[in-house]
Image (tube, rainbow, N blue to C red):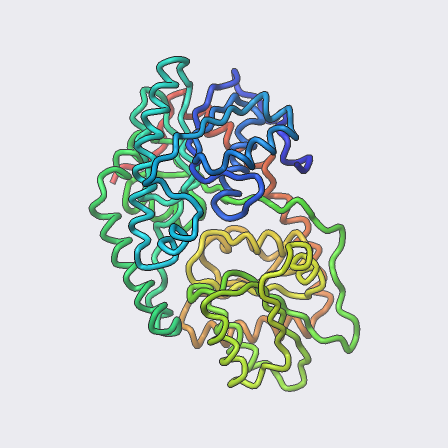
Length: 440
């Protein structure tokens, strides 16, 4: 475990709290939601005694990590909710369900796990009462579980999932992507209108609501009348570079892009922008990741005349992907639906300026010191603005280097130490009974 990930003293509270954490997704060796759960648990454990309810299939990895970190082992107890046949596990069958139109079955499975977790948590609370309950993962707003019913303050977050995908961008996602995201928008809106459990959980949380992004904060206020504190749900990678790549005279501008190749990641926005770059601008695109959209995207690059300048790496070892990022001069993010992509912090940690859309979690992380944000207007305007931003940075190496220096400084704002201090302030507010919300 990296030094910054070890529990240590942070801002003082009047006393150490006994915190019951629900983190269904929690794994020290995984990314995505599992990494979010583990990062938040270790941050909370810096100042408090933590009991974590988590899925049984994480047991082996968690026990291995605890064996290597006696400090954390002394501050965090993990309770594995007994596995039932209907609980999700990362098997081939469940993975198929997760990535298909059958995903509501997985959502139901998680809801049933939360029901069982509540029974376990209620029993533990009866034996040795907790001072506070904190629901960490999954981050989706539609899954508040039942632990908020316990007779102690409730903290919820980071919360995500409330924002819809911009409607005007749906046609560029292909038929399947358009139908999926249109359907998700409709379902999302209906759930915000009709689901009663999130409304009750928000009411119980009061001033203990954490939003993953500014956009999520706006949605929580709009739909539930509760203000919230914005804390980025993810933390930095363990390997932060000491310097950044410099572009030598005559060297092509190296641009990198990474992620799972799904419609919402919207790589075609970048490909079409690259097709608009001036003829005299020499560039290369490094595409990391793979997925269902890869064949179609490669064909589009060919139709646009970009094939010879694009390298499709597929899935590679993390060390190699970090190397590709570090050697890049720009990292571009085109996602039209996300929270805060892990690749964003990975790029900043390698001293790579970021060009991204001005929404989702990117809005909160990228500022004028480390990158360029493109207004979310229309697909055509976004393509043109992307091309303009890339051209401007390609023609101004001193400015690009200044942004690269800024990236290495900006990443420090998202360490788990910083989050731990913010968590302490929220906990203090929660246990003091202070309620911070705006009634509709």
